Length: 321
Image (tube, rainbow, N blue to C red; front, side, top):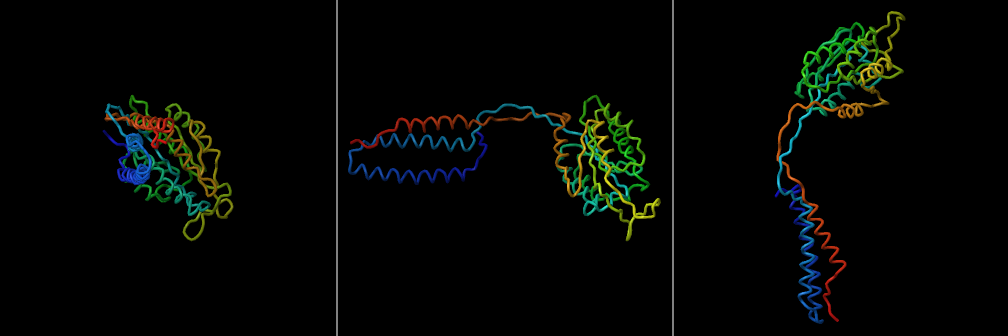
């Protein structure tokens, strides 16, 4: 027999409390027996009845499992690429301490939630690069996240189509006969200087690759720090201001059956993103047979409750007048 909740210390203290209280109960009736004509067998029956259902309650509390059977456990997983915008605008401080630093913090928690899935990292600005291929190795992913900075990619504007094309090519390179659960998390402030992603979203949808977009920043925007100063807009000769552009991010998500989420000091939807990905049906990567036993506590509890009802409805007389 297997016990689901083998906390025998708790059971011991319950039994000890019952024993002490019932000894007091029996002592009271022993004193009555000295003065009145009490048939002892009635007292013994009462004792056995209550002892029986209390013992059954304790057994049910421990969760007895009787018998074993083989059960198939399917192991499911997802392939997820995370594309992170590393253009200079991600250094903006409209989200403290900066857009990029906040994203790094949130991604570390997100990655831990999907330890059973393959995750890869793509970094981009005007070009896209695979920083980490799809892997189960959480330690490698965390190291790459720690090292993210805007100096890793060319800083000549932002091309959102670059990470979409990169993710599509990497997913297609691993094409098999299996129907895989594949998704891309695109993280950016939405500023796009190329505006040529619409053909790619159609291909992603055709390949059943969902894109979940995360808009980082605020509509009010912020200047972009560089060294001891700020990045200057050559058109106005004033500090450049970067703002969250929601339209592009929402459009990409809508055209690929994904969802749009936002991250700022006022709106924090990373947890909603995690829940959305968890709802995706994973690919069966394998299966194994395990021995399973069923918890039979209900039968012991049912018998105990029956005895309690019997004790209440048909009490055994202990004093005869």
